[in-house]
Length: 302
Image (cartoon, one colour):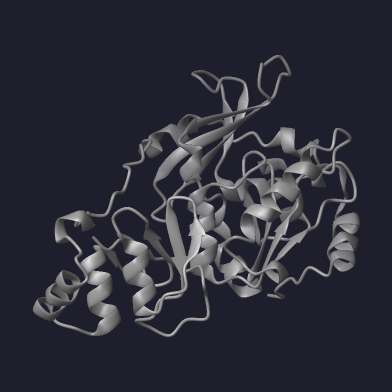
């Protein structure tokens, strides 16, 4: 019986092996990207990140060849492809927990902590956070994580008293977070570039300096939700700007992420651009602007 790879190759697809799936250029429409079409190796289920088209392997063959259902079935039968092997999968979307917006009313609008980090109130207040006086986020400055519909899919909280086990605490599935894209997606699209930083603090320091095309990774890797969004956005540049710390963790993670991203993007699109100090929170606005100039990072002028 013919497998997914064999049939795709016979159709003219040039496949890139990426774990459990292939990445390739869609032949049913014009495209310059070799990564935008994802096809599962076992079932042939596919997803086009640019157009959001998706479906069974049979459907992919059908639109690639421009056939009707009967001729598609005949074509696959001649290839000894079993229709049931395609899975005829339905789109699998994990339901994210949605938190009630009323929780925001329980946050005290006290932004004084960020003033000690040289972040002005008018900057941090944009993100609708505040201090929690009780609950799991007690004594933390808490920021809501919004999805594209402005539903709350999580919270991240920064310890304010210095006796917590973790400086930052997260509620929700951060593997699905694309923060703060609800607030800055237009800036990213206009700049056609994005700067990846480890923490909300780094993002706020950059925002304070007028640098708004950022995304927070909440650690030293990038989740699939962000990766797929970047592919759909068709960005010119992705800058990896993890912490430039003494133990080299950020440096090493930046290199690791670079090699991960070049599986999906051209090498010229990915650049490592670490801050000149430990992190952006330790840099003032002039130092950040000089960093932009030195690294030749384009900023869209509003």
